[in-house]
Length: 624
Ligand SMILES: *[C@@H]1O[C@H](CO)[C@@H](O)[C@H](O)[C@H]1NC(C)=O
Ligand SMILES: *[C@@H]1O[C@H](CO)[C@@H](O)[C@H](O)[C@H]1NC(C)=O
Ligand SMILES: *[C@@H]1O[C@H](CO)[C@@H](O)[C@H](O)[C@H]1NC(C)=O
Ligand SMILES: *[C@@H]1O[C@H](CO)[C@@H](O)[C@H](O)[C@H]1NC(C)=O
Image (cartoon, rainbow, N blue to C red; front, side):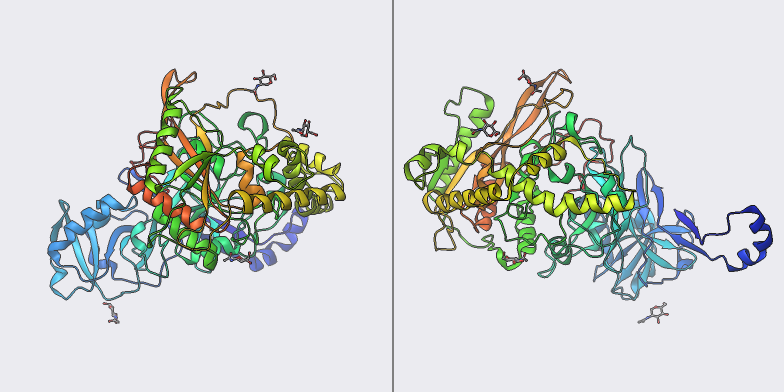
């Protein structure tokens, strides 16, 4: 696509007549290419607007068909014998969702020693093999611009069928981002592009080379406008001038940002039907359930791993705050090796990877509100089987953890029952902090720009902020003290760290993340108001320990919508002592290896399979 930009010209007709000549002589026309969308056989592609400086001799490729002056070609770097080319291309075709044999009609062979100018058969097509003396361009598929001989990188285009994205992006050569200008058929769906995996080679410095990353639209990216899930915010503020260090560290480690993704408004928990007014909530590809929460909620209902890091170990600079006292940033990820590498990049020296050591797993396993009767439901059986396997695996023992009872027995004297004691801690802290850091400057800036108006805000943030308005500064101070006292108690009495870095945590605390229940979005909810109360998923939030979600399997559940048994994930949350984030990832790796938990696949179930309403673009998921 191209866009034509011109400088403003005179608007009045009279003035136009008088100044026609001078206007035309001073108008500047800047024609900017934003890339080009094409199809090659049955796949949609996007030709990057940014070529390398590589120039080759296009007239060598007379037999290869061109589209709009572009020809699909392949670059092969490194020594490869002619006999090995076909096997290499077959491997690429299987491992990369962007490459296809049609790119191999013309092959630029770097490291070619002269004998390779001959024509030869490759994947049943006659291919032209052309030597290339440039070693700076990575292997993979390209489009060659016939007019200039420049090679342009290729992106495969996908429909955002789940409505998960806010904006599809490509990296620009100056280290920023710009929108991907491409649209393929889809109903109210963005088009997202992914570059060929073949361009990226994993190294010690780039352990995430080519790993595709979607970024929640509260983390700012250089050159990109953000929304925080709010249209007025998106409209009001200019693109970010820099990428926050958390995301920048992932990019520096080789990750490829493919877009920003939806967030509940201002990161306040919202229900799909009732609350997502400004933007529509994403769909869950597994069954007909809903998403919710930030990392752990979606992980529980969709079946990937998900982690809430120990508080304070990951920089949140240039990320919209809910509450700096409580906020962290983590991943939804399927592959446990990528999870470990991504944590190492994200946390830097705050992360201790145990991936290549032999950990001493804690033997004290504590469960909160766990099922005891495997016959009660398929989910109960999965959870109990998992618990038994875990206990055997670490050679430990299980004890029940009832925080209320333990708090009553060993907690600091004075405060009331735990449920009452912690009832307003979370809502007071998040609302007071977000009002000050987000709402106030937003309302001020919006009023200045719009004649004193207030912006539209969804019901949930409004209800929560209204609550925060009646909380006094001294009440907030009290709740900061409550948090500190609960944290101190939990981190010394319930789950203290141990000095040995190979063990790190004195125990593991388990609670149920998701038991395969349905939460269909075609039911009106009663509205989610102020999040009072205390439950197991608040532990990590208040005491700063890591909390990771592990899929343990899935259960069939009769859907009233599809009149069919749908597979819904069952997931467990595991807490370890503060700073023991690496232990949980290693545990996930070892449990996958031991066959105790599944490594989730992309698709309609944890084991893969078709996704309803997804167009057929081949079996490969973009999240790898
Ligand atoms: C590479 O090949 C081009 C064209 O064949 C030639 O002009 C150029 O000098 C060569 N460069 C090197 C470094 O050999
Ligand atoms: C590591 O933790 C410290 C202390 O909380 C923090 O200041 C620093 O930014 C963290 N490092 C990274 C890479 O996030
Ligand atoms: C928590 O606070 C809300 C609002 O004040 C109140 O309605 C509810 O009863 C409280 N719950 C507990 C357990 O104290
Ligand atoms: C809404 O509240 C009513 C009355 O408390 C309850 O019966 C109903 O199940 C609730 N609906 C939802 C979707 O939570």
